[in-house]
Image (tube, rainbow, N blue to C red; front, side):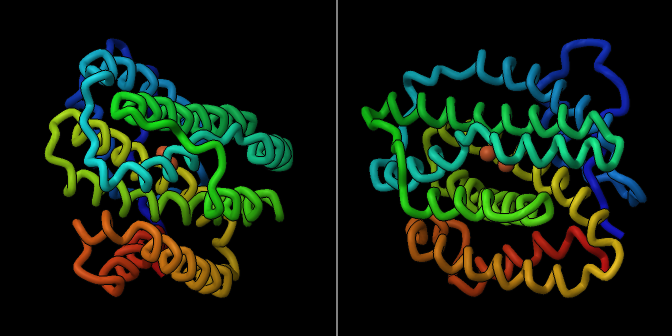
Length: 262
Ligand SMILES: [Fe+2]
Ligand SMILES: [Fe+2]
């Protein structure tokens, strides 16, 4: 059975602090769940929006310094963050109806808003470094096509794969960055990506709770192929955190398989 982060069970009584953000992001509940906790996730995302406002108030995005050698790579990830999620919303709506779980659509909308928030702040950081954002890019286009091809489970599988890659990528950027504000921004995004992995993982594990072994194996293979492409394109950053492709691929596999306790 998988483990999940402890999303808050009730609305916050006061403005949450940055410390509580870190705590939430790192806290992985020890109790397994038998069913996705949709209401808790919707509450969590609402609280996290407030935390982001607090975080952003403390950062001067006009003075963030990015290493020039990393900018092209960051532009690719910025583009990946800014999807409108139309297909995802449509699939989430179907899921909500089919499972009588209306809050799932709400949680997915909040999740999309969170990714768009990452895109917005990364764009501001790029602009501060006199760099325009990409409007299209081949690997981002490939991911978008894959997400549109199939049904809900395939969509969530592709998203989960992207979350695994995002965790390894932003953790590498944290390692690689010396400028304090850039480091803070990447750390903050990394916290969200770790939670996103748990969020989608909770639903995918539930969907694969019966006869899911083959689908998980297929997912591992897909993740390995994506990791190979990502390493080829972004290894100059990933090498700041992973000594080799093998260690990077192993970390990706572990992040995925930690969602299950097969
Ligand atoms: Fe993101
Ligand atoms: Fe994410």
